[in-house]
Image 1 (cartoon, rainbow, N blue to C red):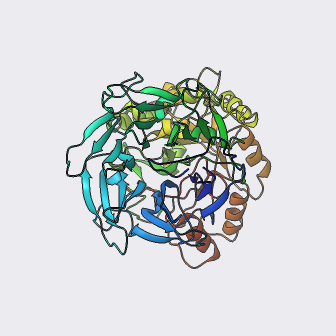
Image 2: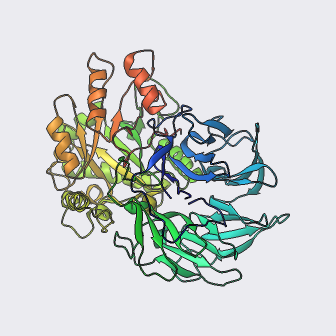
Image 3: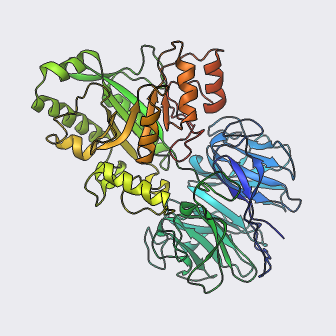
Amino acid sequence: MKSILIPTSHFCFIPAPLRASLTDIRPNTKWIQNGVTVAGGNRQGSGIKQLCNPQGIYVDDGQTIYIADRDNHRIVEWKCDATTGQVVAGGNGQGNGAHQLNCPYDVIIDKERVSLIISDYNNKRVVRWPRRNGTSGETIISNIYCLGLTMDENGSLYVVDYEKHEVRRYRIGDTEGTVVAGGNGDGHHPDQLSNPCYVFVDRDHSVYVSDTENHRVMKWEEGAKQGIVVAGDQGQGNRLTQVTGPMGVIVDQLGTVYVADQGNHRVMRWPIGATRGSVIAGGYGRGAQSNQLSYPIVAGIRQIELDIHLMKNDYVVYHTQFIDDKTNCYCFSDCLVRIHRWSQQNPKHYPIFLFIEIKQRFREDFLTALDGDVRCQHFESMKEQILRVFSIDSFILPELIRGHQTSINLALKKQRQDELNGNYSYGNYGWPPLFQSLGKIFVSFIDDEHNIIVGLISTCESLSNFFFIAQTNINLPYASIINIRNPLINEQLIVASHMNGQISRVLLGYGDQQIFERYKQSRKYGIHIISTDYVQCDDTELCQSVKNDFQSSSPILCNTVLAPSFCNTTILSL
């Protein structure tokens, strides 16, 4: 029996079928419910035994697995029963050089040319890389946001263009390609796709596409002008008639579709003509047990903190007392421009939480000298400066989280209760799923012990409709991000905030004797965001743990060890 490999946040999981146009699976196949880790599984990281948000995989005839190790910007090879992998492409840091990759999403093998073909997503290119001892790649397709790709038995290459909502076929020698699915803009009609991700081609050259944001899988027969639904298309949800944000897809010799239902943490089987599928792997909620999956693509955030000072009627930003080009800029608008530039260059980045905190004399003015109207004007001014740089649709706004509930707090509690009852579908309230948050920004004002917001939230429109509030009270109607002052003594607050569905955030401090203990406790209790103003990472025990767990000495950190649904270790370099 062949097996399906399922990439999760930092390891590959088995069972389920090889991705090829000749995938034979017996109709009476019995699927083992407990998977076996065949690559990674040693926590998230960049070591040779580790993976960091693996995406597409390919298994050759000898059962060697090739993995697009996305956030390590490399392709790794894991031989059958191996305990370590081997880098076979990239691995030279994030970049656009011929020897580098930048968030690869998929990899296949071209047997005729003995090479790897890689979708180098953030470099907007498809690369051919020698399979053995290759030190650099050759760009074969440019200016394409390619996620998934595959090849038929004739050597024709099929690539998914995520941004143009189409699949193109490139025959040998063809440089332009031909649209074989979609290509009619973003939409839900039978001739359209919406942010497609992965593709499979069968023996008859029919193209199967995971139409991710339409929550369906589509089949386009060769030469067809429109597709037909073969899985889902009943809206997002966890019923057997639904798929939520489908990703990887393969089809067997009988036309049965197997799809990674990422939003429901399961793999589903849809026989030809079926209106509902069956679960063959996962389906027991999100988790790391052998019978569970946790997003074939892990959700995550990056955080940026801007500490605002008021000088000469302008906003000046210092993140720490040291100058660090990656985390400091002197002018608020300059910071925004730099963040916007990065976001434009990486249009499908994980969502960013932009934290804003007023500091020192500015804070004193807020608390004493400035009346309510003037305080509101400052929030309105910050909002206006942000919207001069970003368009409004760049943001996840509080009203989206609140949905039809009466408050953000109630919406998050309801979402959490849904999850505890086994319902992981998005109910148009609470934190949106990852595929709806890519490229987006949450703007949050940090109101820790100073209670600046008290008395303003109901009168300042900019506060209530644009800013999230990071503070310490889990019971406030607008409570969404909870600041944990000291994880050593705030265990009950941490547990309660997580039960409420709120994001927890802790600032470790500046290097006192308890900083490492606070760090260990934050990991233990699954704090979603860990920040520290450690700028120089030396050989102390804390810094060694930071290097091992977060692969960075940046003062901007995000804990993924126990909170994979919110965090991503890749540090945003401005």
